[in-house]
Length: 287
Image 1 (cartoon, rainbow, N blue to C red):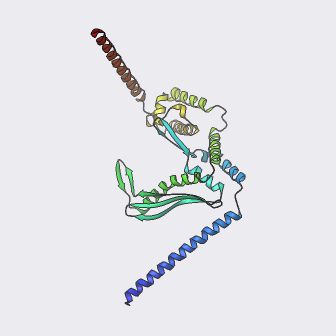
Image 2: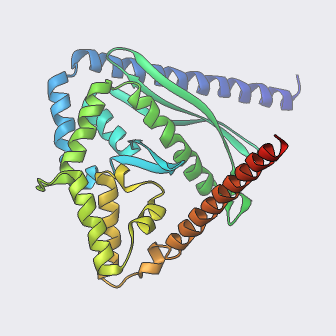
Image 3: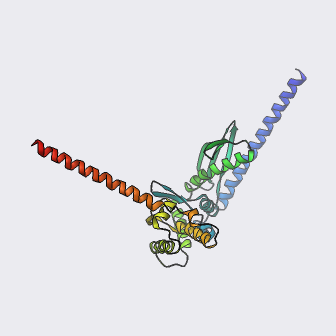
């Protein structure tokens, strides 16, 4: 056997030994985590109380929900920040994102959440293309840091889904309700009344109409939540401090657009009515 062949064989053996040692170490870590979870099981009532106490923090409550407009309504749910707090305080849960493989132009990753007590596991394997949409063009990413941040960002949504599949649904609902109470603060007014007061304030102070505000958020004011009021408060503070102008936030031509659409619909109805009258007259003449 040549010296070069012997070197390749030694390198292969070293690689196998290193791989076996790594797998063995990871297995021992998993066994240790499961053993500790069994030795120190969670107290469900204490865990729920810790979650609710965390949701009483205003800084968490303000980022506890995500929401975005779709088709004139809104889609909303617990954010990744709230999901992390749920997992941390529920206890004995391992969660995160692992990059399984990195190929040319894409990464294969796995998001997971594992309840070490009950051995219930949620995982999602997904592919992340090494590209990002910027200024209407697809930009290819080559910097390792950009790729890492892209994988982490894409994995965060999957981790949230995995955690919410582990933590009981009623605990999640209680946490969301507590966050809404925290945002409400000491105000005893119903949400609907506070939304009405907000709309009146914008109209009287900045001549911003309800239509302009609804255009900004993408859905009707009737669907506003505590999170929306927090976002509105941010806009008001920015306007008061002179950091921005009304035109930076709202489109003043919204009412004109709606009026033109409304007038056009009236014209169409009028034309259709005239067509019906002509058809009736034609039918009468034929008789």
